[in-house]
Amino acid sequence: MASALSESRISTEHIPVKLVIAGPFGVGKTTLVDALSEIKPLNTEEVLTQAGTLVDDLTGVNEKTTTTTAIDFGRLTMPGVVLYLFGAPGQTRFQVLWNELVRGALGVLVLADTRRIDDSFAVLDLVESAGLRYAVAVNHFPDSPDYPPDALRQALDLQPSTPLVVCDARDPVSARASLIALVEHIRELVLS
Image (tube, rainbow, N blue to C red; front, side):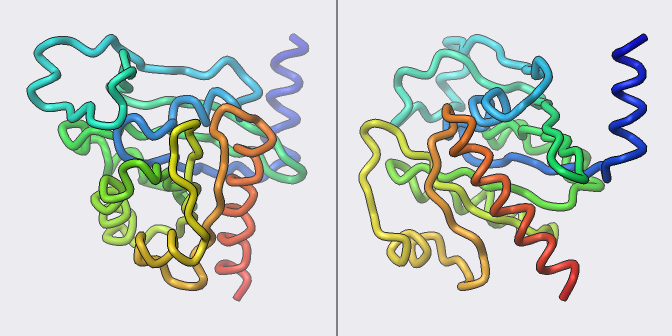
């Protein structure tokens, strides 16, 4: 009963907002949703198979053993808003889900990896083609090269107004700061 009452309070006191976490294969989308979610996240992680090696490029992510096959889902309540987080699968073969996944989304947080920056272009193209508001969070891995923000912005061909942050998807504080950058950007665009 208490759970139903708290769910009711969320729906009446908070504005529901759907956000998508997107990025290439192995960039940390599932990890970010896990770090942010106040509920046990729904993950559709499956073990990578030998058959998948024919279509999944493991360059730069050789240690990866699982992959998202549909979505990740989590929820984060912030003052006045409840964020519903949908993590998109990163492989091209799962892009058939893209249009349904972004339907009704207010924005997208695109994760990038400096070890494989070129892998981000296909995702950025999908986001821009859909006309979605977005921010970019560069997920920092222990072996990631560091670049100044201007170099990252130029490498990703981002507009000056597009938020760009560096994060650690494993760290809830860092992951939240990335999400806040996206939400603030959406707020500015909606109010202008």
